[in-house]
Image (cartoon, rainbow over all chains, first blue to last red; front, side, top):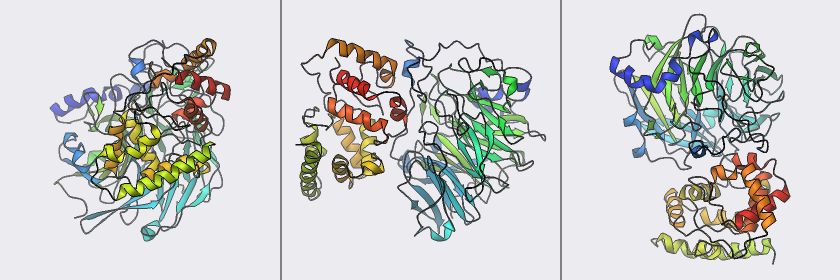
Length: 427
Length: 204
């Protein structure tokens, strides 16, 4: 299934991505061969809704070692970054674009080339400006609460905190003295669980805002477990997709303008099931299954009773168990070879709820003309070493020249990926 | 003397100590940490109301807390003027990243606090032990409640500090590094918080 990658590389990389590869195209006809029957005992009733430990089996030594892994608060020094250990297909180069920015998450690029960076654990939005070979890092907003999500549209930067959206107009002209962000939307739940946000502006010039399921495996109301859209003035809310557990990345297919989004499966069910999903919205308001049906063919042992997975939209691809596929973009630039045109690049931050870590890479996903998934292959690997993270990929974004940026919140760094003769940014 | 008075006195003392400290660059971390230990306890065990014992804390947890104090991320807007918060902001505001790392590593070497002689009321201890299991405190804090990595050592922490901390997590007045404690405490009521603190402070 791996189209012409050099043989040795494909063998090396195949192991790390097996979960992605076996899953995809024939999926809606038959369940993936890996799906074992559900075996986990029911969750202890006393666990609070939202606890990441819901469903954790008692008395299991391997499971007792698993808890969410916190990123270090301080960014890694530039000479400690793992770029030399990362592997890419032949002809691609990776370099450090910027470092020393704590907990780098969502990335957006302005019309003049400014790179904007959101954060989940910090309280600032940062702008990176390359000028005369020098890198300037500017704080353009601070004192925010989990400003993870960013969108850029016609000169305006939109910022998503945990429970409100704000904007800075004409942002690139005001990087040195930015005005305080203007709040445009506050009609959002305040749950901490899956409350941080990825946002984007669609081809319909509306702002798309996800609200995660407020816990590992819980029922949600009309305000949770969804992607909604609003007009840019905050009006006209409409739920575009529901049954969404937690998406932290989406983008629109440049060919058919359909919305594709990553979604993370539930924890504590098993090492391998359910897998994360890549989904496609073909009709406004579609239900993608959570918390009743995960990975399109697996009824949740707690909430699935009385349901069938046929009630819900199946994913177009399974992206691996606990892999945490987050940021994704379609590549419309001209720098990468033709085979990557309109391909999806998906950053998988990597698992915590799995004994052997899975993900921690960037994968390229190729689509058929009808928008279904044709194949996928590893693009950047090497973030997991001896079952430890050397870094954790969060978001990808393309620059005007077709090069790709990748954020790594573990190290507080942003990498730039180019194709062809090695180039150095900003020179 | 109530908490606020204590906080104010500490604040004044700390500001004085800090200003003295600034002129003595080149001191060892142990010397610079003297004002910290004056309140938190030189042996890792605090004798001051609502001031936590720092002994036995994992360095990654200490680093996260110092970072959050420096960045003014530890308290919600409602708690910004809390004297304890102000003290810690003042202590850390001029810390470099290396200071944060060095202090974390230094403090992490202090011995863990010891259980009190009072073994506690057996019924209440048993009731609280069930709450620990129910709420899976010991999944992340470990069976011995000694924590790991970013998860703090809570065994034999001061009871008053545990009560205050759990109440503040529950009300979102203490903002966690992530949302884990706010989630976990959502269904725990105040009597249960008191029982948990009673048990954890007497854990052996």
